[in-house]
Picture 1: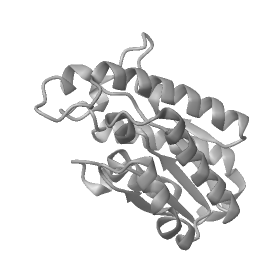
Picture 2: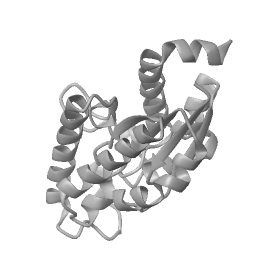
Picture 3: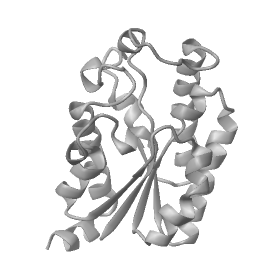
Picture 4: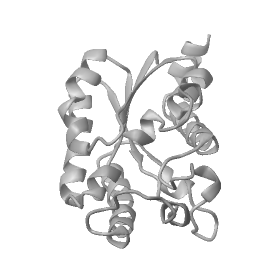
Length: 205
């Protein structure tokens, strides 16, 4: 494996975190492969799909890690549309002989979110949180039934009692801090090594 593209929104771009400490950069350092960060803050899965050919297919990576949906839910977009966009990208990846991996977005840390002066979800936070939980479930189920690897960041950001781990978030409660990015990178590295171990060995030699 020589190249990975990370396609997503601000959770991939790394809002307010030095680019060297974002999870795509940490993965690149750990695996010693080229990792292209194609995260754009505020983007929806429709936006990801619209730029998939240029940002992913034309780059000819071995793997694409696709993660989105949080911004869609902010605008109360339909879960079926989000799911369709993500799995359309996975199908396009396979068509271009790129291995797709689906990232499950992390939750929100509401104690911090509620202190911020920001434009909230159009349908309110309660509905957004419910749909985010549901999105995590349906993406994991669909990935399993479609034989597409997925990396579950949603439950990674929960403690044993099912509470969101605030220490993984910036003050806004929306975006991972350095600790959150480190946790995400560690989960990605472990997953990719498990899935693509022979190529990992070749890349490290």
